[in-house]
Image (cartoon, rainbow, N blue to C red; front, side, top):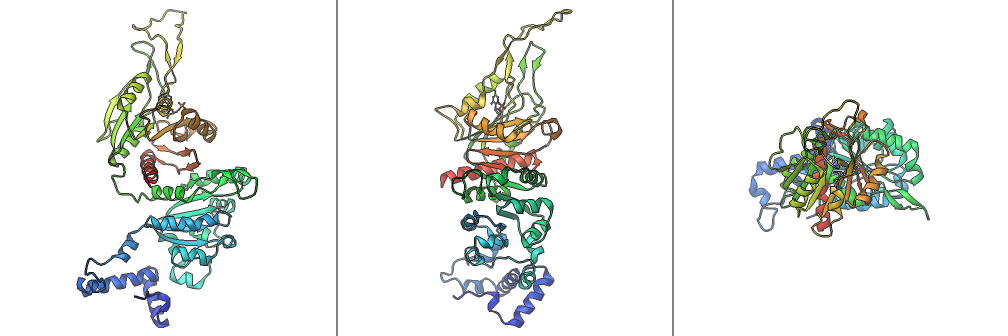
Amino acid sequence: MASLTVRQLDEHIKKRLRLRAARNGRSVEDEVRTILRAAGEEAGPEALEQFTPTGKQPERRDATASEANHVLLIIGGGIAAYKSLDLIRRLKERGLSVRCILTKAAEHFVTPLSAGAIVGRRVFTDLFDPTGEFDVGHIRLARETDLILVAPATADLMAKIAGGHADDLATTVLLATTAKILLAPAMNPGMWSNKATQRNLAQLIADGVAVIGPNEGEMAESGERGTGRMAEPLEIVAAVDVLLRTRAPGVLRGRRVLVTSGPTHEPIDPVRYIANRSSGKQGHAIAAAAARAGADVVLVSGPVNLPDPPGVTVVKVETARAMLQAVEHTLPVDIGIFAAAVADWRVAHAGEQKIKKKAGKMPELLLVENPDILSTIAHRESRRPKLVIGFAAETENVTGNAKQKLIMKGCDWILANDVSPQTGIMGGDRNTIQLVTATGIERWPPQSKDDVAAMLIARIAAELDGNKA
Ligand code: C5P
């Protein structure tokens, strides 16, 4: 059957449709869908069955499209724009409904025709396009979307978004939206490391914008290497998945997950100990989220003031050595998440009795190093979890230290956060994470520790799914 588009309709019908759509606050396409659906329901199921040759359940294409998550892809003007065409394909493969805006600069790299052919619908380019304004309009483009993805996000676009500019369709939509925003920056390494770009990046993250990449590697300019390559389409799609949480509950069903949480207490004598300020909130939230996702979860926890998360097996320990023992005992697991703030040192010889205070005489405490649990598990030759995830609580050079830690500890991912007292993260309810992997960095927006946990679980599910494919 030939397909029908709104453009093929008579002018007077189009006009009436537009007026009706505007009155109902819908796009013309959605208005047509609503009319067709109402007509189908009025005529009864038999009428719909006439269109299915086998007489089986009719395909509910419209319903699926309207239930799908809507992603608005803004393609910025950079050489990486060519990858955005593949990105559209990948997004659509995931069942997402995709709309696309090209900036003026992007049109130097890809054409509205090529992007439109892959999106399968018209691409938007102009803020003052009278048809565009009537059919969809920038405010509706901003509203009728669950996520806006900017890929590639150029240095200029990032600066404009951070500054709240609205001088073209893309920036106007970005300013008007309440949807989540994900940026996939791509630019020359010098531009990326420039203080202005880093200042804009910090502002955007503080404003709740999520960022994936850029990755390190070869640049388009011959002989140039560094950080500035746009994340690969599959990495971007995984980040989109995570932000939309399109996945059904139960994404970790059949997986065994180990989480460490809380501080450890290292005894000096039976009443005194060395400790740290970790509350265990993040680790416990991760264990709870993994259990909600259907995983079989073992939480090895140091001393905390928190209830046991529901549906989780909790093993309570005091010291680093006891934690390592409990962790080893829990193997094999599919995923190991090491969120505990393990004490680096312990007292070599803890007193068996309370050490007595003697005027003017200080007890000498000889410290020895504790085992590194994360590193021990990540370097195992047998029964190493498929995914080993560590944390890096830093007070300076967060990204640099996290990258180093990833290598030193031999783990697959590091969730880095800034725990300087002014951030309020240690012991607080919120967290700002940078996910550091071998291929790049994802900057997650500031959010509650529960949301970080949910995002991590969705990210893990996407990773394990990707590895299966
Ligand atoms: O070396 P640092 O303590 O910064 O490393 C942090 C990461 O290493 C966290 O994931 C923490 O759980 C883990 N760790 C560990 N055993 C230690 C020290 C840290 O598992 N003894």
